[in-house]
Amino acid sequence: MSQSPDVDEPTREYPAVPDDEQSPAAVPDPPRKSIVARVLIFFGVVFAVIVAACFGLRSLNVLPSFDNPFDSQTTDRSQPVLLQSMRDLSRYVAADGTFQVIVDLQEDRKYVPDWLLNRRILFVGSGTVEEYVDFSSLSGKALEVDNEKKTIKITLPPPQQGDAALDLQKSYVVEENRGLLTSIGDAFKSDTDKQQRVYQAAQQRITEAARSSGLDQRARDNTQRMLESLFTRLGYTSVTVEFTTP
Image (cartoon, rainbow, N blue to C red):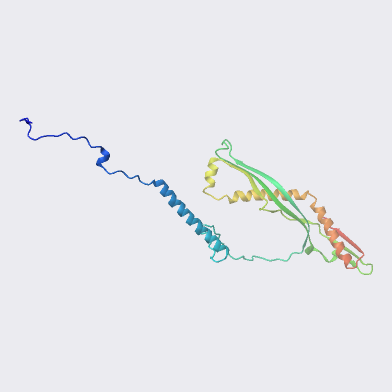
């Protein structure tokens, strides 16, 4: 066969080669999620076994106990108690009463709104008042004794009432309202004086209430019964107890 003069070399047509024949078959990678899950499960099981072994050995007192490093600790740096004074008491506490009072104190400024500058505190105070007889003031004529007739007469001063002792464990603030400027001012200064005024108001009202509560008469009756029982055991058949007028 004759060749064309325009063609230098003979040519042939080759069929196209498919892509899968040009590169090796791709191997599918193992799923990464399953591998990570297996690793996590393995470490979780190992950790659980270690924790269970530690608790088991701790229950058998094989391992020493360890304190919680994040547990709060309280350090007491208080100074030793100093004795300031000591005195002898010659009083007989014949009766006492426990009282409760609600103190409602409000401080405000004229022509100033309450939300800006004011203070109101609602305080519940609980305190105890004692009624006692002071034997230290007895004179020589206060005791008249007749040993033959087995009679005795005692003249005592009237019972006295002490000041109210506020019980801070049973006293508490119910509500406290403060204005904006009052709250800012309290942040830069101590509020001790205001607390003391609330305590003093509660003590004063409890002391005043105790005077009309009947503690005085109860103290007289209790003192009389105590002395009658005492001298009757000593062999006296007649015991008379009188109180002087204040």
